[in-house]
Image 1 (cartoon, helix red, strand yellow):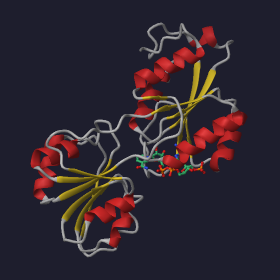
Image 2 (image 1 turned 180 degrees about the horizontal axis):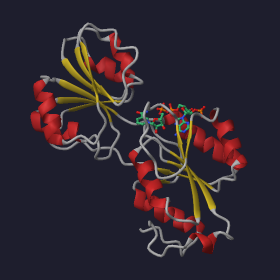
Image 3 (image 1 turned 120 degrees about the vertical axis):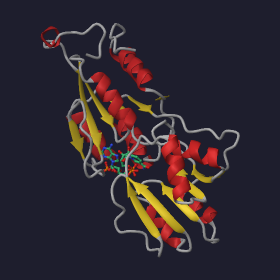
Length: 270
Ligand code: NAP
């Protein structure tokens, strides 16, 4: 039960439920849905792009696949009588976030973002900051190096432009087609990743440089902490600037925002 003062289903059956659409694909979206699932005043749907071959079980009903751009999303919000859209997509999923802003502008439905903060460069880190995948390809240079490519499978193919390097590519689902390079090995795994195990991997594979997105959060931070401990360089792809949307950084803050929007006495376990 997520609410500390739960409303039994029969008490609220006559009341209008607050319909919320959560755009997901992240640990935060999953966590938010788990927190909201047991509250009978809320009717939550989680939307996933459908990229992951075997998505994890979720605590709320899931809809899968694109909406057909901002207009399609706006139509969905109206048709489904959604009262609030929460954009809890990955910080690098910029297209859907732009669509969310535009769809809410069209439909007049409120929107806020649940987005974790980015990692901050600490003493001992050796980061080269770039603003795009193309920038990371460029920064890698052409002196052969052993590269740990940890940016997900969708954009890994860009590194076929640098065939002189040896790659260890880690992703949740297989990289298809594989990189067009003579030396690449693939690891299928999903976080969370422990710093100690990341250090073992970096040592065993004699990694010289890590390519990472500044995703933030703890689940994939292990490789960054491990790189610091071992003095390994990181090419860090930074986030693009986001539009003007109210943003919270934690599931707690998102619950507080939802409670504030719908009912001051709504206690979502914050
Ligand atoms: P994207 O480039 O921003 O979006 C491309 C299209 O995919 C969107 O225009 C939309 O299609 C559809 N889409 C994306 N997220 C959706 C969602 N939650 N529900 C329904 N449709 C969605 O997104 P992406 O970078 O390919 O990421 C896809 C999904 O993977 C996102 O849910 C994201 O949270 C997750 N993810 C992304 C990354 C990353 O590094 N990019 C990392 C981890 C997880 P329509 O225009 O047809 O609506």
